[in-house]
Length: 439
Image (tube, rainbow, N blue to C red):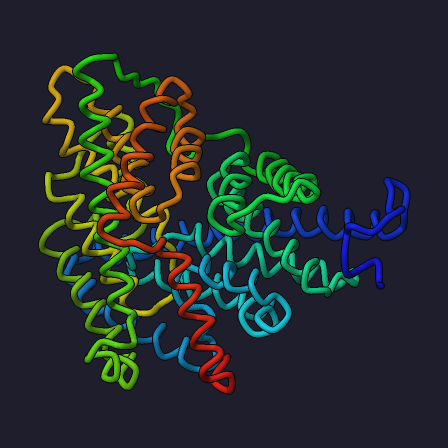
């Protein structure tokens, strides 16, 4: 047996050559993932700022620019880049099931580079997408490439490098190291192997240190000190857990229905992907032009404003962002769900805060964010840890945990299968049916 194929080999101690090769691959890969995540973030911010400059000239430019960009992205992904579509997290989950066969076509460096470029292109057109899911995709592809370069090409080793790369990607994207570990355990792998804990933590730590060195010590949404008192304030936990969980489950169900090949319109969608993307772009542009510019982009600024108590969104923001996210994802273009989902949750939490007068509204906004994210992903621990680390607020630990657990249960009433896992299974089924169509 080749020592490169499995890391559970007797005698492979601290000073063994195979052990140091694996560490070098992991450390080098983690550094590369962090640098790629930083570059991705900067390029995404620049792209969306350029779109906003266009809107500053006239908001009606969106009616031309957004559908055109959506159509162009759909055309590009149909030319051998099908693997770049969507969030990227389902691709990584599918890759963990069949790392050898899947990795060459869906988790290559070529796909990773295209994923970054096309996601940035989507933000240039105002798409309501995030970069965090794509960063997981990119991170897994980079880490897989480093592992292969150092000779770790076995199925088990490839899967572990993919898992470490995905965790490092989410940690670098949000600057949330603990969330990276929890995300890998809860969302990507569904299990945690004791022998792999050091590998996973090392990748996350190295990636986090590089991000810290380049960007400094920051929290994604800024620090907040909101608290939720016992008594009436805990009604917000019940309201956010149930309402946001149901909303998140509804979004996931609609998203899965939009991509279901069994629906009547699926044949038309498959024949005319560019026209569908243009139509989705037009819907998004119409919302952004006549309802509110918050429909465009990740929704980061609106969510941050609500968390900091500087709300400047209307009561329809949460519902509008919900529809904008669905239109962007239904277009079949590259882009993630995390940041836009947090924005939807912030908007819904802002609405629910009026039901609990006397309670800090920013606390309810935070509960709305974690509740809706847990509803969409059905990953309560990841949702809880991400929201706490992004706001540097440990005082809301118990309310957040209670909210995500309620949200997970409420979401399952509407959408029985977690969205990322359902999408991953569809990808694998499609690959088995038409292997020759793989990009």
